[in-house]
Length: 254
Image (cartoon, rainbow, N blue to C red; front, side):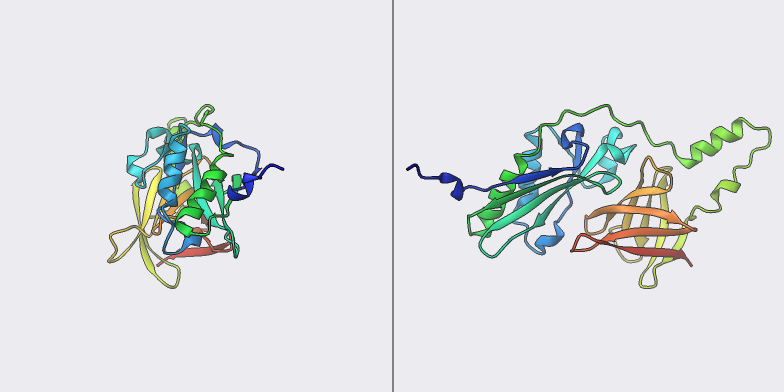
């Protein structure tokens, strides 16, 4: 009877959600993976190497360094994440990809019987990556048309421009608070702004416009990606939790 070597290898499975990862060219990897706490065992570097071998472009952490296709429409970018799914005797991971609306495009599970974390987790990720096809991107989405450009266009077509009426529900530059911390809203350009906290060299959150009005892709100070939006003149961020759920963080003007 043959020896079955599969028990020494990882087993992985994938769950797809409509779109394919291979439809995308650009992927963003967070600076750290929350479920791995203080040690990610080099998984970020391993994931980047694996994705590049499949012809994906892994974006740098700074949005300013992104190619225009990614910078001008964040829905051309997939957000990658690795979740720690470890059991008592097995190292397991979930490789997850989400689109700009925070919807899961792919979840790929990998496991390894190697007990040591430093070898077991990368081995599990290697198996999870097998379910990710090579990049074969579809046509890129066009740049986001900002509200400011819409106002300019509409005012040019009318004899009585009313450019001031559209800005009343949009949070203006200034100071905001969620009841715990105070931040300043700083507009970088027509499609990007930041919330800056006094005394910190790293923005509390960076907002990048999406194809949906008043909905943004948000990069938090810890490197996590999430979504944000305007609501009744407030700035709202969906804060990801360890259990995969989100809490609503509302910043109101001071």
